[in-house]
Length: 269
Image: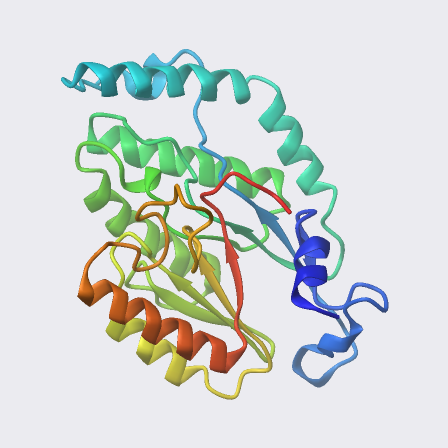
């Protein structure tokens, strides 16, 4: 089975490491048993609500064009979360089976732009609790996206709140926004692409050597999506330092045959 076929199978929102005969080549036996496992995957959710004042009453962008663009996003998100997004979450809950181990969310969990740190944390907490409730209280793993740290004090709030929350979800100590965990013999490395911590990624790759399969969970892709991607991919900034780092990690990831799960581009194959 080639990687394109793997991607097309997993894009439905359910990543199964033993989906009938198609994925049996991945030898998905968990911890030596004959049991297989699945993971429900959510893309960019941009959680928000109507009216916009619930989360954005403190928003105060002084750049006129940006204010206009972002307020249009609030309206768009509110309309999405009126009916369609709740229907999507309900559909995701129907993918859960007895062998489902976790739910992954690929970043941009929330819209952000709250204008106040306390409100930003409430937005994060509200959606985490809601998704947990609707998705069977399974461990819920999210990776930081650009919207998740957008707004006044948003980055500091996320970096304090989410590692603590991921510690609860995974039952292990998480202190950074780049971290790893295992499901059976498989390693999952979660990478903050906003602020790449190269030393931590190197450390996690070393610690997970020998894994049956290595997955990289990241918001922005490892490769540019198209010519308009600008810097929105791993180490995508235009500098010699970032170019060298990008090539270095792509080589390491290729040697490990990593499977990358990402979001950001709002496109599904």
